[in-house]
Picture 1 (cartoon, rainbow, N blue to C red):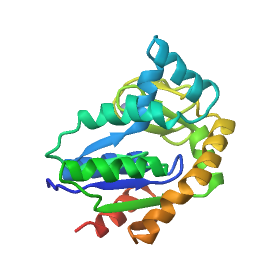
Picture 2 (cartoon, rainbow, N blue to C red):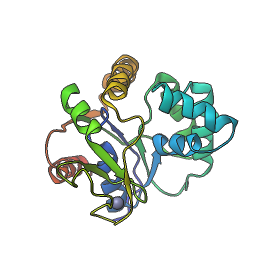
Picture 3 (cartoon, helix red, strand yellow):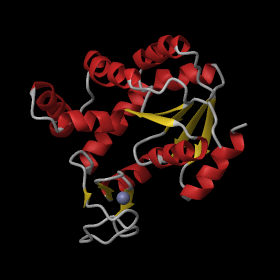
Picture 4 (spheres, rainbow, N blue to C red):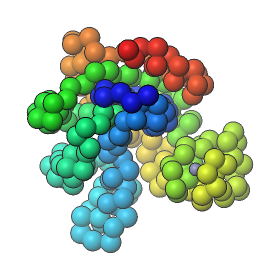
Length: 219
Ligand SMILES: [Zn+2]
């Protein structure tokens, strides 16, 4: 069912927002604007910007400054968007600068945000989920060790590609990111709350239950 709608999916690390974004993208034929994957791809490049971003996100576990993000991730990604298709935003906006960016860019291609879903899980649950997670190389399927695969299993049970643990998925780095999120996301949440745009979804349920709840809100 093709739908030309634009959705923001928010939530702490490990809330499963990436999975929900993929399900919605499949259902409504939407494209995903995801900042994390682009950043990790750049961080793997053996050049100046690659080493710089690798140092920030993988070594120090910090967030990339907006001026670098804007140029390397946002402008880069925006130029590649299919302007005829709806968009799911996963991992943006996280700061006011990103809201300003989208407030300017979306109208320029005749788009606006139609829905915002915030998938909520506790801090404890977030740390627990992320530090016991692996991803597969081909599709970034999130896999919980002990549930979706055993500790020594090397292949994704969904697509068969190799699995790995992200360097920045240690409990300390997850806590760092949660801290950052809380501080920096506050104005973003407040901004959209004032506009009554956010629908909160309890995230400590199954993937299917969360997906069904979200679909119930989309007209
Ligand atoms: Zn996979």
